[in-house]
Image (cartoon, rainbow over all chains, first blue to last red):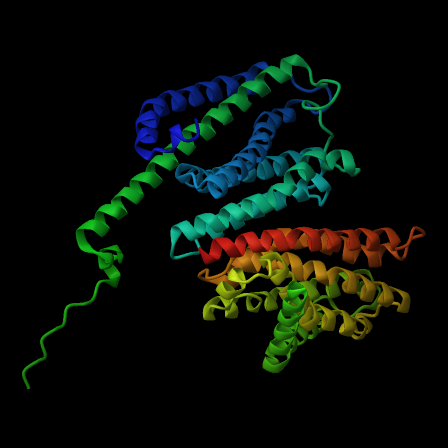
Length: 259
Length: 224
């Protein structure tokens, strides 16, 4: 299956057909989910209507972790099996994951101000999510820091695998440390403790975020692959100097003024 | 035991280079002293405040000073082809990385730990807290060298290497910092600093076990 997907041309054909469906499904789930969360779902008995930030904050957090797991797995496949598309997928997914992490941190901060009285606190869960954000940024910076993009891709893959140790720390931080952030209430041993009327819109939003990730990933991978094709075409047409930007082209010699 | 001889030879070579070229230890110590001295100017020299944050200042300055020396770890050998030699030799690349990290620690981390008591005096710490800061740095700087070697191996040959190294190393240096600086704060409590120092030692041992593998993998990717 992995080998079947390794052909870039096949991926372009497949994604050309699937991307519109994925995109529209994401939009539908998000619109329905947002209406359900913001209007239909009941307010919390303690927090009132402020609890509705949860419907953005929690799916963003879940997918921030999920995308990092995806990046790590794709990086492993790219390093071990030299799978060409896995490398592209890992590097293109990282900015999406960074965006989800930022949404999680920002929405959490906005939620914390009315609920906890502070925009930020250095407890275990928040600190480890901030570290995850910096791991994403490091991966993006590293992958773009090399002249040779494949070298950058390999370095980014190794870094993604090194940082995977942060994921269990984030997940279990609320159990291992006495933190301000509330413990797990959905994915825990013994079943979830959240009311179904709140769980349902939460799951709809989570599915919407997931479909958004897949759609954005396919979009980014398609444009990355197109960029590579464009670069290859330029190389074939004009040789290495064709890759230099307009500004770097040698200035044509001006004729000396007749003295 | 050719591997042992090669390991010791590589360690001594790196140590000689660090001592003869001289700049590295001096840069690290100079930055350490400068960073610690600047803080009292920045936050005010009030003794009570200095005692609260002094250990944290010393640890953060040591961390930043260690960061400065990281790009020298593999870059020179990468440029002149010595790293290709090491990758092809009979000495496993993981052990070569370990030898280089050991020499790096002796040339930078150990001096940092040794002069930390004098700097701790500058930030008005009590004598027993100075002892805790010294031991925490002694235990924690090997972790800084080892974790830093992973970042240095990843950033080999990168443009703007200093920026990339800083971004890479920041999330990975936070655990030793938390437990190292926390040890000094905990020494004021009944429980004492023992738990923090033990965890810090655990971090260093874990880094000793895991980082050579990660660095060697990153070096192999760089040498392809």
